[in-house]
Image (tube, rainbow, N blue to C red; front, side, top):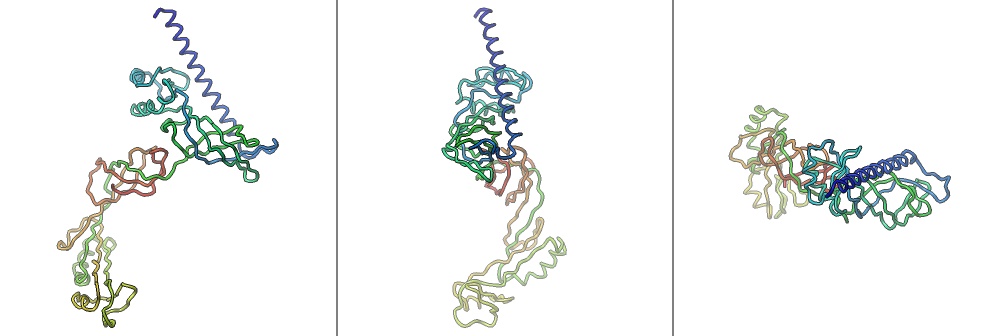
Length: 353
């Protein structure tokens, strides 16, 4: 290739970069202008209404470039080596990564994220065939629309997402719209969580039914050692089953299949008086790690402060587990959370997988 051809190619790149800047600036200006003038319905124009819309939108495609957060050229060589990347050009907003076609946008962006480079791409969003626009007084049914919005390209083409956007409609047609916000949806996700610290533990001791009152001396010693406020004991003064005959004197109350027996502990006698009798263990809970009553079965519950991986920003939550972990250990968890794609924005519940 001769010098003149190289010069032509460089000029084309410069022109392309200028065009991209103009596209983004003009789009930003138009969106911001609309947003600042979207406080209510403009009823001076007949047949026009505007209001906030929440709808499911189809990601129909992307324009084939990504405007990145990259501010220096230290990673340019690596970025140019990503499959699907055609070129990297600098403009006033940073570096623009040009890709071969719209199908390359999402996989290229996934590689950029691995390099700690974030960015946005212009996504084409197809709104439902029919949706309602209302200002609280007037409303219109709009017959579908395609809109463009700068989004982080983590959504595959063909994905359905929930969006919130301020829309101006006239005679059933979208004539203007504001900034598009993707709305998190409630999902069940399997994630990794990194243990930050152990914040507490409990020992759960199962006390056999017939010994639920005979442990009182040991119980007083445990309270004295760990503190009364750190010890909880629930004596289960009942059995389940059905009386075989008349109500025995030791039975204080019968409610369905639950038979309350007070402090009666003669298991053999109960077996004679109650059909299909079952004898629930009582539960002694001690905050901390307790080794008393070593002949009784027990469980340990540990409470950790953990950091969820794969969140849109660092999220720290409390996790209860029967396992012992050290700071820095990674635990697989099941999370019920609001998320955009698989990026968690807030957690509802979490448990060990």
